[in-house]
Length: 425
RNA sequence: GGAGGGGUGGCAGAGUGGUUGAAUGCACUGGUCUUGAAAACCAGCGAGGGUGAAAGUCCUCCGUCGGUUCGAAUCCGACCUCCUCCGCCA
Image 1 (cartoon, protein in one colour):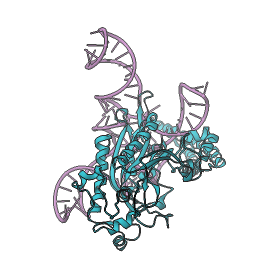
Image 2 (cartoon, rainbow, N blue to C red):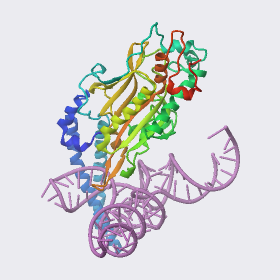
Image 3 (tube, helix red, strand yellow):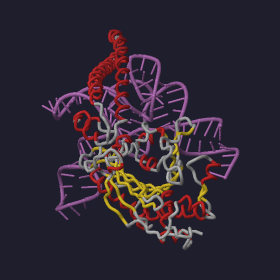
């Protein structure tokens, strides 16, 4: 959610900046709602003031044994007038709030212009596309041809499309990837490891801005009150500071967790239907930082670097891309995607997305820190990114480490987690 | 699942219908003292919002939502949540 004060005072400027994100801010609607709100709020509050002072006068009169019936008589009219105004004000404020909840974050100045992903800019590359002297296979072909490998049809029997069963060594490799990533982030990058609920409430999802706008992307459970499966560990990790006022000494907070993620993938019919690129359930090691506003730009660079290290240690060729305004997520001010080389497709595919949300999530969550200079609570900034997606990392390893025979070599960084196996067999 | 007891400011913890947005302690900030620090003493110190150039002023908030009342932290109802005991259980 954006700062209402900034919207009020710099409406034109905000509208201009949001244009980069292809969002059309309804200035007339905001102006109208604001004008009405102002009038109504003034009237309501002055009636409340009147009621309060009358009530106090009644209390005083009764304490002194005096007659208060004269004041009491006037209160009846005042009460119904107040009730009326209050209801109208509440309706108006709800209208304003629900509109504002649908307004995206302002993109950072260095975010490139552009309508879609074709305008994203390559920031840097690491390694070069793996060379093969033979015809490469894709990960599903490789995985299905292993004795103990990927079983898409079994998963379809158990559940439906967009799920996978991993058997034996592949399941172990998948687990090795998650252990490896967690170890690097906790031992070398200073993150605290968490094990969190995979089911969260509505307030958490509103805090990190999946709700109310993107309910269709979530799996909702039959439970009262509403429960949802997490689409990413960003939700539980970030919401740990919801409604908190943090001491500055504990900042920055650096949290990581390995969790499954659940996404309905509504609206992606026909996209990546084959293989494990796009699943309803996948695992991910997530990185979250809670920082002082002045440090958020630096923290985004740092966190993205932490995700890059994983790909480097796995010796997977990748490139770093900055998303253009049109491709930027709803709450993000700036996003870097890391794209890993997939030989079978001959393209780089997203394996991590690292974003700064500035104070957008913090405002929704009322996540604050006490600034010793002002003595006042101020909003923190939140940053998160995948470090990295495990299913996609498995895909990348299978494809980039394949040999002509169909054997898969184990990346050296993972050997310690795979009982020194040379090959996946 | 059953029985009982709680949820109040950054923390601890008073407060059971009327100048209580809230005693007290801790923490924090400023000052006095000190070569400096600590201690001691003095003063200040909740959050969100409206309005205003500012000083200020007004409104809302005591788990959440709703109700009773001229007036609710305080009474009533529902829900959430924590603790204790019993039962059950991976």
